[in-house]
Amino acid sequence: MLKPERDGKWFRFDDDRVTPVTLKEVMEENYGGVDSPEPTGPMSNLMRQVARHKKFTNAYMLVYIRDASMEEVLAPIGEENIPKHLPQRLLDERAAEEAARKAKEEALLYFNARVISDLDFKAHDGFDLMNPISSAIGKLIKVRRQDTYATFRDVVAESYGITEEPFRIWTLVKRQNDTLRVDIPIPDSDLPLSKNSH
Image (cartoon, rainbow, N blue to C red; front, side, top):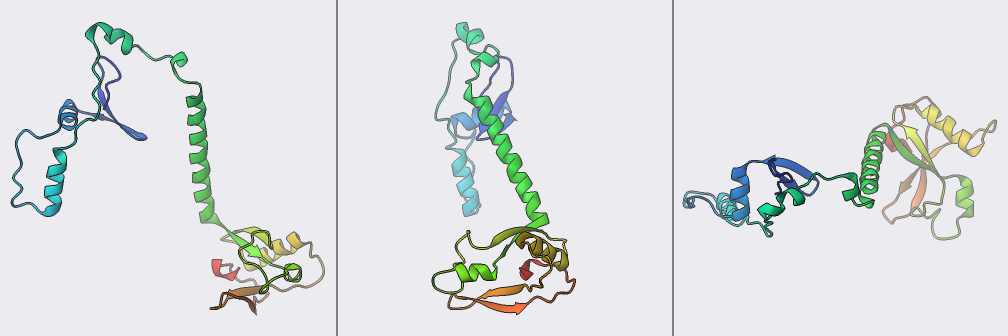
């Protein structure tokens, strides 16, 4: 808890949250204890722990300012007093928060479908049809959750440069022995595309 200005308010600095506090909170939570011991007999175990905890909320560091130095120590802070790296760090944190917010919103609208072609199967040199852990196999296609299967099929065709020749999309299933097998073809009808049909 800090009072940044001589005649200002007290604030609680709790990680990235800063909230105003009353003088009573400052005195009780910095110096520990309570005015009078609370009876713990009829309390539950949880309430006893809370009551005991209140007695140990002591400040681990107290800062005193000499009256003669008050104006100098609590002088207004100018831009020259702020370390150069802090403004950039703040901008970076805000950019990261904005990116996380956009990613969360996008996850509600889109999902990623991995499409594996017969060429991927032919190029695979190892156990099973392919290595499902490898991110280099196949193509990752961003799909709108509201798109129809026909739209998805068009995107796949464009992605692989398929124009006139017919092609079929099959589902892959993972078996109990951790191997992958082709399951059933998806009908070429205009079905709604669900997350389970990729």
